[in-house]
Image (cartoon, rainbow, N blue to C red):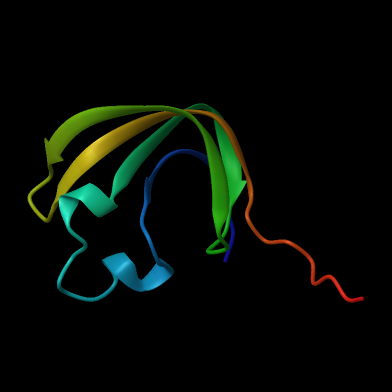
Length: 82
């Protein structure tokens, strides 16, 4: 599944972290905001930017950190064989 022009997403320690209760603790979730829309899938990502402490309560879980992303890149690296 592919998502296009994503400007905001939750960064969690694992893909299934938000799919099954209990939700991750607030200090394990970062709300990422990007000025430029990025194309994403369910693959890992590497996010570069500035992290701020900012508790947000959304009714489902608390989010402890906010990050202004300057770059979002794929975290998937090809297998390296010797």
